View 1 (tube, helix red, strand yellow):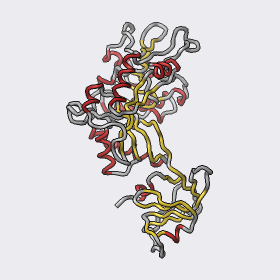
View 2 (cartoon, one colour; view 1 turned 90 degrees about the vertical axis):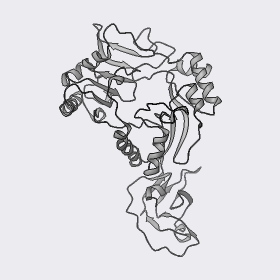
View 3 (tube, helix red, strand yellow; view 1 turned 180 degrees about the vertical axis):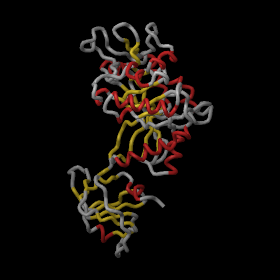
View 4 (tube, one colour; view 1 turned 180 degrees about the horizontal axis):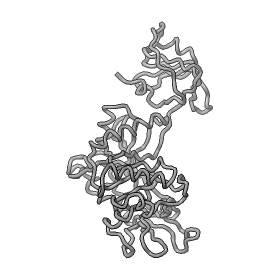
Length: 385
């Protein structure tokens, strides 16, 4: 038996509805599963007309119109909207679904560096000395101090635990002194390809690395099953935001059979198979999945391509392929110098030949492409290459 939310399919309520009431059906010509009536239905048609009722059957909207539909259709579940607004659900075309592990703090909920330091101290007490602490979502614009986190900010709270926190958007990370030491980063360390290690005025690394996470390989990996409940919670939370369909920008085919696109160690991230398993067990928004480029050989061995799947979970483009960085670092690749940064124009990720080869391979196998191009130089390369 489907839930009420499942019947809503591609519609979401803008306000909290009264509880669905199961009423004896009046005589009607046609049967349906769900009837919503006596509301203000925003159709978003060519004239943005407002109707009163919606009829749903087999997960699809079969009629939209006036309250007379309440007499034309019978349905086991009938909801009197009592004048409330019913509107189409939102589609988010670029989401990264992030799970919380036992090592994580939630810096996105902090309003100051002091609050982040309090979170770190609490997590250090919970995990004990020497254990890695991680987290996602800090944003200097949301912090009272209005400046980026640095290793010194983290060292104050957690001198005995390596820490790496990812900035909102995922284009920068910051590690404390212990994390830098473990990763082998000092004043003489060369920048990773297409990335940048920030330094203080005296030449020492300040903890921030743009467009690369040199710390992540040192953090003990969680198993997918340990994160599964958190992934499900994050997916179901989208309904509360009115999001009924989305494109997942961080998905792989890593857990496919080896020789058919998969690898021996698929990691703990979301995959096409894992998405489908979750959707089979619980109601989540409809999802189209970006698939991280696995290289030409693995992609050729994989038997499917863009569009494969069903109405709940399907394959989208090969992506998210970062042609350059972002402006939050900044590392977006530009044609002119950054203001106040003579000689700095960000960095590209691909040579023309590398980019062309990836696009040609994907296209020949029936895949769309999902390219991240932020700076004008990256856009130019993508169009011309």
